Image (cartoon, rainbow, N blue to C red):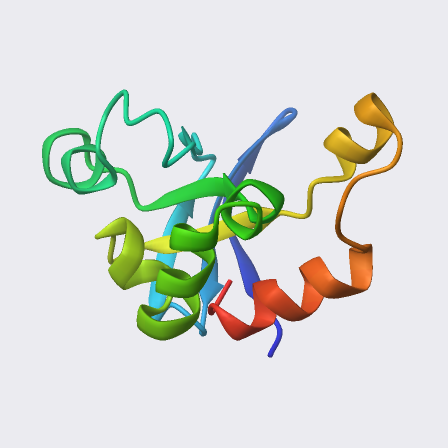
Length: 121
């Protein structure tokens, strides 16, 4: 499924648009800030980001979720939106930073990509 971007207005180097995210069933106005969520360090809960600050989209790390037995199983059973209690769009990073930073990691890129698809990212 492809995400769809529509440009609504442009001025010099600035653009205002809408990013349709069919998998999440939402449309996000851009430009947008994407809060980064690490479920192991709940600084601000995703539900609060949505309710209090109007966050429409966030990002988390597939490698971090996959590396925790509890989060991995819950994400596979419940789905990512239910796990994080967030109804907007959720993007996941594959963990390439961890691979470049630490060298060998315990999971392959293919495994992370399958996991990301399975949890609804």
